[in-house]
Image: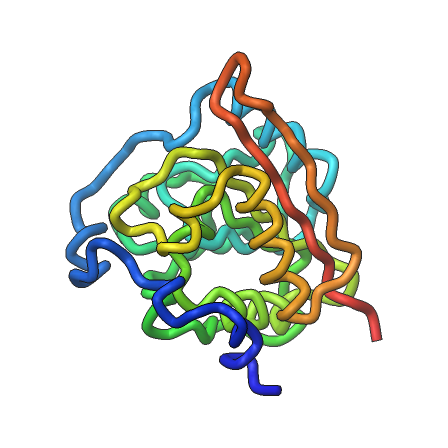
Length: 212
């Protein structure tokens, strides 16, 4: 089955957005703000500390001016992808960057088996071809390496896909898990990093590229 058919049980309108205007125009203004609060950010940073390999190559997918990486952990390279070049230039953890609209072109400009981890923080809700993007992440990851997808209940709602807007946090976790499964990932786990009682809620779903 082709990658594009692997969510064929969902209607095409599941991945439509209220605002169908050009994403590049929407993300053109520089927004040097954080999209989750300080407590949720701290929890994510500590979670990264448990999973990311020191000295490895990390891709921060759908990044901006911050990556939430542990300040005391060094990596051989941190690659940043996003929709706003100026925001990426403000991110001091990034060694190199590229701007790309994944909804138009989901193919990542990186070599196969070249990354030790991939991150996607509060961005998965905007993907209109999620399984294709997840499959591309699987291509560039080294076997056994993690793809860490984290999300909250905060987003640009008009740019989030319809199915995301229709689900609650548990539904979001199940949907992301489905993306992982259909893209061929294994060892998939879900962690509630913040339950929302004292800060923004934050959930992480992690899948690992299966070894040969």
